[in-house]
Image 1 (cartoon, rainbow, N blue to C red):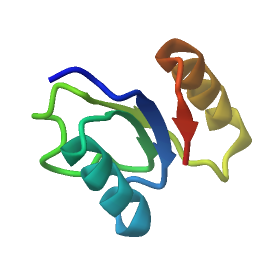
Image 2: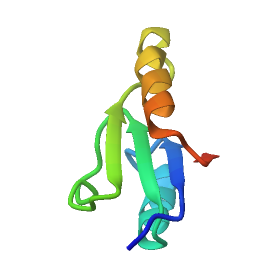
Image 3: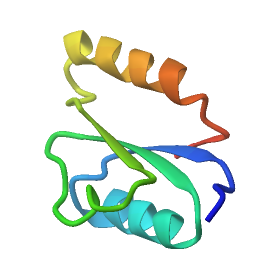
Length: 77
């Protein structure tokens, strides 16, 4: 399946961020997930990549900036 684009989604460890990531993957998007802990079950999807980061910690934002630059996102959530 070809990708519709790439989404960068923060807060994918649980809750709304996780639900958005799951829905986006099912809809055919590539997803670069960012969160404190990688959720189970998404790594099996070839369109999923994960960056471990706590967005409340300034020193971890650098990892997120790199992930965003590498992914070339079409949507930031």
